[in-house]
Length: 249
Image (cartoon, rainbow, N blue to C red; front, side):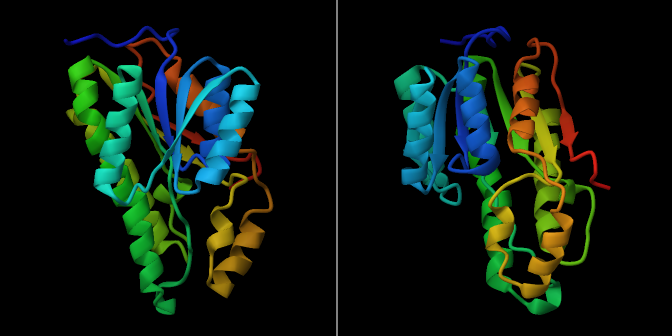
């Protein structure tokens, strides 16, 4: 049976990908504290269980699902299971991402491929999994975590910036193509406290990142932006929010 979009004050069923740390963890914690049913998805289930236990201890509702966003069948199965358990899925926060920066002449092709698999294909897999449910329900909200790398390119960021511009473009395309009952938001963080930079293997990029990341804001700053977008009335679609440290230029 077709249903309608939920009022902005109604608790939602929210899937957060990449929820084992950083922005994903902060988003799950904040949304659960606001009364939403959150489902935490990532590959590191031990980390997910720890976050979910903290949410439940604070009175929130949290489920855990092992999730590999690079596997479309896995993403679809997780989303379908959420709908089976809760009757619907209202929001997906496409947060899973990797950032192994390097110069192109370092030829770290495997790392390029990994960024494309997670940052671009992972986003598409999430959209493909939720969209049929949103269309059937008559509403839903897709939130994509992009990056200021979608709007600028610096040495070592060519491939990463390309994936984040793709994420922005895919999400904007979805907004233009979707019925107004499906809201679409791109959240674009600047420098945020996270594990992303810890996975940079290229020494030059590592050194540059230490300087670039001197001024970082907490991941909860991004979670608050997501909360703001979700809390708007059904006829208001927050298309994009860019959130940076005040000192970032």
